[in-house]
Figure 1 (tube, rainbow, N blue to C red):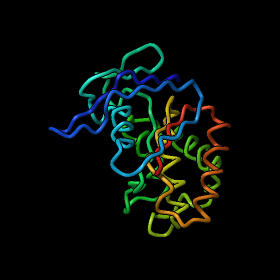
Figure 2: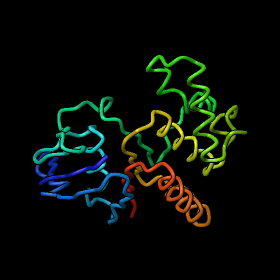
Figure 3: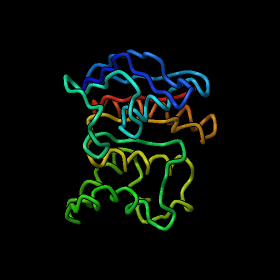
Figure 4: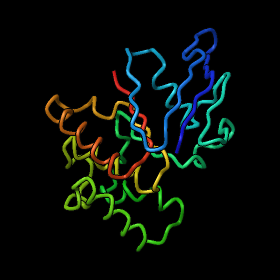
Length: 191
């Protein structure tokens, strides 16, 4: 899915978090938003996700403006820095939770969970809870949860910052490989 940001701005009171930002991302492209803390990277990502509304400008998916489209209707997957896993749920239940909310039949949830778990090599970890997983494994569970709905756009908000340097390098390469294989338009925020 092509993503275009046209003259995008976001104000929080008198603070201008994003000012007149323009960007075009081709379908299937992997783009990194790089900059210091507080420069508007995450705010931009949250506007693309529909969590924040722009103060001005437009967000386009293909040729359609999506400023007023609810987050649940945007066909996006998102991975946060904190992973946002439910501690009382197994990896399987965390991964399939979005499909459960959509009332997807259990057999379909199982099939798709196994499919995405295989992509990131965590098939044997699906019965474990987050506390039983390493940081890298938790990150993969969060990635699976983002991918299980088959999004058109994948948004990654500093998903590697909680990992040690060696694992961060490994996971960066893994994300690139996965993105190429799936062809999902991906926006990666980092500093």
